[in-house]
Length: 151
Length: 151
Image (spheres, rainbow over the protein chains, first blue to last red):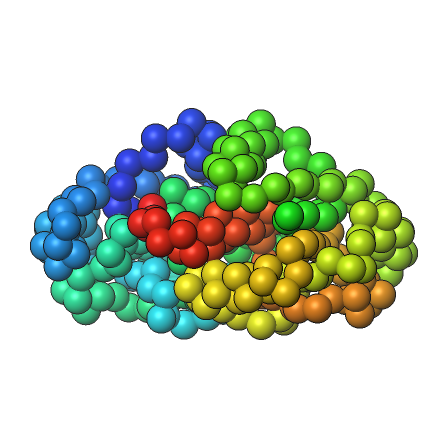
């Protein structure tokens, strides 16, 4: 079972449609759910992160294997990431990914993390990043199932 | 003037809509055009890349500053990438980005490159990657114009 906790609503229809498409494709391989918490857009980043932290924590089950997406986290190629996910699932069948808001994740959330994962040194908007994460999870399952996929 | 040469048509409406949205946003800052060449899906990667190379070369102006997107290229964070793009534009007002097909870019195209740029060690589908590139170009212009943008 895969859970993605992320901050911020998605307004754009094309991003929502892309997410729905990946959720549909992934349903062939795993149960997957997205928990969306409100982004708190205070002028003070620290206050925003603290408020978002409380909202995120409502969805976190500390028994899950928790992967936080952090720009300074570890980098993988798609093949190695699929192997890593496979290994994690063999130990713990429940993985929770956490994507932060505009200001990133609070230290308290980072402390709960079992694995810090970085996709890129570049900063992406949370809407697009959510699709990038779904795509890599989907790609991982395709690789693990020996199904061709390079598009 | 920014030109993006890429391999493969985009069938999904949500990806086309996302691309149109970024092209609209970018039109405020620069002329930008996308040249889409057919992907050649032969079973032989070498043959595919050679055929795609010929199609790509029709759009390449070697007087442009050519940036090839390669998984093994140089990595930047968004701030440094915006500075790099600014520097390039001060020397050459025309940048051409080239995104390869499923099998990557042929050696002949790579040889024309002035800069090899990598977004991630992860492999992304060309449709999604095109949006990621447009987003980073847009982000660069926002940064260079001192406009807030973190979503």
